[in-house]
Image (cartoon, rainbow, N blue to C red; front, top):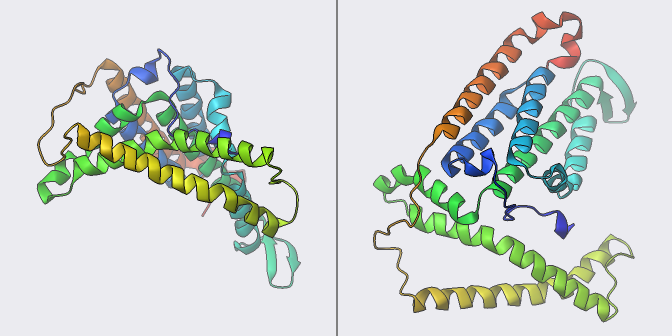
Length: 281
């Protein structure tokens, strides 16, 4: 499960997506997520899938690396889908057990929501796999720059995000080492009931917490030794600039927005007979 965590891991490659400005990729991801939740037809999700697969192909990141990010939310997907199947209302009743009723509309909505979440996670994985933590932090700080006028500590917030992204793979590796060390001492993390498995996690959490606090203290000492101060205005080693590729990405976003709106408006006109099963209300 820990190997399925892709956030904070960078996949080096020379691709169109890698060369995009990090601000463009952040804005594209935000727009894509909004469009996923604005789309209320499977036509809209089909368009979102095409854009997502095109982004994966343009990034030259192995598809299995992007798909691996979905494994970490399989439990969430299953739980959310069951809740919607059992408690979402509708008109076409399929089965009934006491207060639990399963409607066809509930199943359609559960599938629709599951696809949304999968696409959302995969798009976020593409962002982190094609953008270094430093570039991602610089892009986030640049986009949030207007908040400086209301005294919001944008640089501090961006620094926190950068450190968090850098520490995710480090803590994952540390957790794997602790698990292997505990297994070598005879610890069992796979057998037993749910309560026993939860108790088996305690010998992992305590040394992991101690290691995280030690690393945080060492990082703070290193920053103090280098006279780091967030109060002073800091310059950038690499200045962000928009290029021709960013213009192409902006056009793709515009087409995506227009396509989602058209599909939402004209879906019934395109396929009237399937309207009860396609349009999610």
